Image (cartoon, rainbow, N blue to C red; front, side):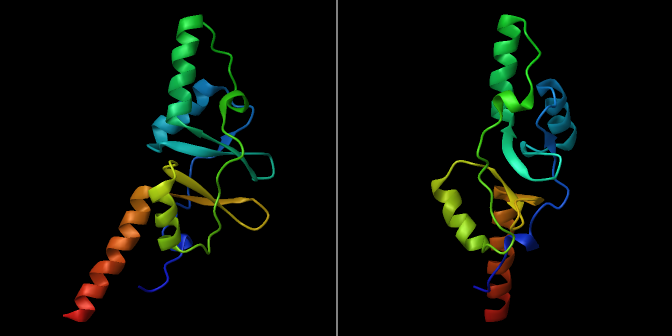
Length: 139
């Protein structure tokens, strides 16, 4: 299988959540984008955490129970964020996905600045495209 890199299949317009953003605003951002989670970036664009729908659901349930809604992204984001480099092989990432739980991985440059994201669907698509092209070449 030809070497596929995650940069060839990444989402170059991912949701970017801010550390000081209210969770309610982050939820609206995720819902309007159709993405299941997003990297949390600082003012320099470096990934400092990750916020998923699951994190937000947990917070919203607790907020409705306690009638509090003043929570910020920094209060519930996961740190450190599991990030990958753009030159990582899709096959290597697929092997990681078999063992690990995250559905979305932020892709960062060597300085930790967000370049994009990749999710399980994009990895599956990349492998499918590669396999189909291999079948066509063999026929």
